[in-house]
Image (cartoon, rainbow, N blue to C red; front, top):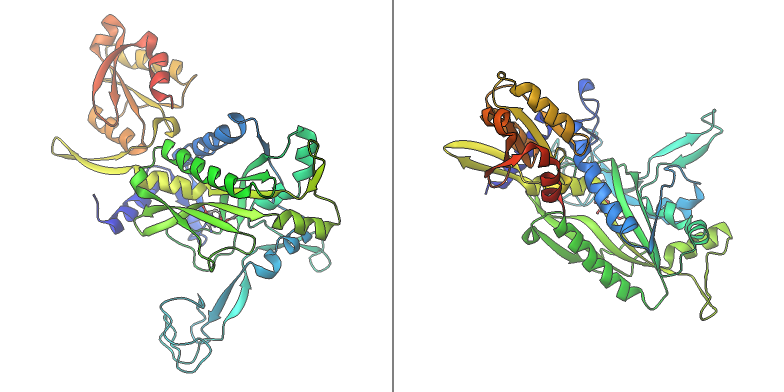
Length: 445
Ligand code: GAP
């Protein structure tokens, strides 16, 4: 096992070197806590999102998909409680102009009092009393800034689902209990972002709101809590690195009756990357109140009317991707040489296979190209004829590519290739004709 602080540094360096994650606007010095996904990163994150979508929307018949806009009517955020309550208490240092959360453990003393000392410049008595700071980004809709309406970049995708509850119910002919799932960007002007892509100002959420009859909510809450953990284990994350954390009364969000975080043991400690919340009928009731539109459900069997309760599963696509990368990163000694390998689950690996001609002669490059052309009609594959075969294998180990396919002298005679397994390093000979089927079988799951 690597010392934990080094693991994070190595991961950030690998992410940049291999094209998983780059700093946003890097040539201009970067933009604080905003990140871009490179060629391998975009594939990994997309595969995770697709797997999430498939397991909820396609493989179940009681969940529908949705893609709501980022910009919403400003009243949505009054109803949801975000305008009044989505705030952090902040203090400023009048001397060095740094800004901190009021509960920053580095602050000695009570901010606002003459004895309190700034943790950055060390001045005494220069910290302001805490002031509430809203985390929502604001922008202006319309051509003239002064006269235009203020709109917010959504801080969660969930509200797009609540305001479409009736639209989806009526158009899909679902019956309670049923769910609506959505993947999309969310924005928060975080005060203490950091730890690479863990806490950022622009991120993506994968959220599912499950509408249930009041009284059945705790049962569904328990069901979804277990389901989500199973899904994460199925994604290949080591179970020993995962745990639940139940929110205490102080931690519960304003809308929640009960909530569990799913935490991962990152190099910087156990941290949440997904939450399961019993949001009661808080959101739908508030939208009913603020919009004046009835958001009730009529149960045709019992003729009862009620506002459904909501069990929410809310995951960060970026945080889940970070979990996958941190969990997959391994360094090992292979025959006296260091090997860095990303052991991501083959089903979500950015590249499924890489094809190598052993040497650039004797017809091997042409044959390898043909095999590669055939493969990439089925999988995201890569062709590499540069450098020693050992170095080409190492490059794919770092990229997390589960299979390395080498075309050698024997291929030109009997039509077989070697398939090297990223994790076991075992090599087997497989007929090039049957390669697609062989890989499909091994990529399943
Ligand atoms: N709709 C409920 C909700 O938004 P949350 O716990 O505030 O709940 C859910 O956020 C998930 O979104 C988190 O578990 C995390 O994965 C992700 N997330 C939240 N803030 C984030 C940030 N600043 N950067 C990256 N991911 C974030």
